[in-house]
Length: 130
Image 1: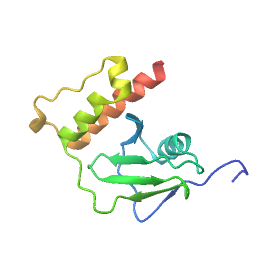
Image 2: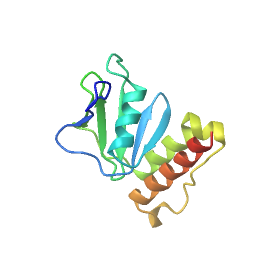
Image 3: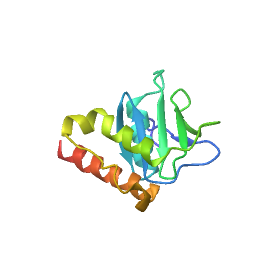
């Protein structure tokens, strides 16, 4: 490993991908560990005290500990619901700026991993084009 590279660590167990990184009323998609590590580290370097949450496609929440550059499962946090994901998406800064809305109709027909994947794909496409 090069001197300027940082080792991103996962404590106990890792998330199932894709994941949504939540920071400052905005969300960032990550489809693998490399993208997740890059997003977490760039949003909150080790000297930062900012809180970053990561929610995987099963609805499990993780916390990024910036001082240790480690992702850990959220202890005692409830699983996220489809509605909570959709509310987060529709109220985040990027979605409002880009005029994106995730429809809240027919949720019973969609599985949570599919909803999260669609949201991540929409954000990844938007971020590449800007």
